[in-house]
Length: 292
Image 1 (tube, rainbow, N blue to C red):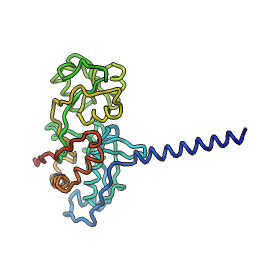
Image 2: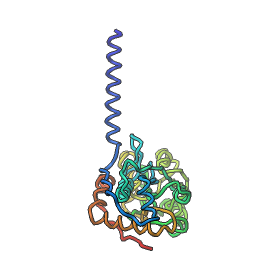
Image 3: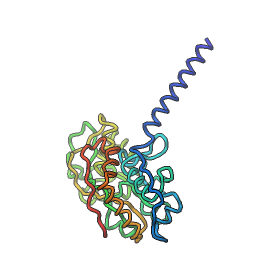
Image 4: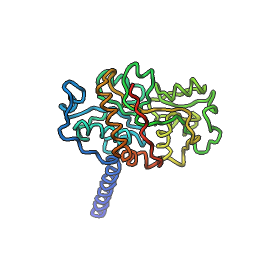
């Protein structure tokens, strides 16, 4: 009897180990890390030179955004933003395993840049004039648009005007939160991140969650029987940029040069197809870079 129990335990342990290994492999990364440039040359004193000499870069990204920046089972983030970050690091001569990923949420992106806790932020970060007062932006590298996530069985909300006076969840300090209140009169239920909005929606404590369409599409992809987009139409334009220290013009221009190159050499398309393109089949074109 003891032998049988021992054997069963061994089989359970083996099965658990195999499952864990399988899940780790699934969550271990998206796309393939580009090879770092061998001995790139940068002007003395530039941020590029400093990062290259240090041999590492600290990149802020989100850990809870399916398709763009989500923490995998191996502890490393995966998604489109992550792939863009890896490609920029490679141009600095920095391999993917020398990137330090720091979780950033909507409310702390500017402060993390200002305090030097990160070198750049790639985190579904909409470029706005107000944010430009605190940080600089390279890009945009993607054009998103605000949308509404609702429960699968709710057909009462199809457009932003339908949420007037109703409870809607969004992230504190985010552009979508401001828009849904100021322009459409929603009663905001704030959250630290968008994932924290899902339970209130599921339990009908709020009628919708609002943020960019690509982020919401990730939640629909994960739980298609629970949620849906209220409409395929977006009601804002959200240009995503790469945040960096204010007035570091040389670094900003250099990143812009890399983004434009990614759009031409296939890097951009490859990053999309390996991540968000698995759900959003229409591959985007790289937006025109804003060289302000």
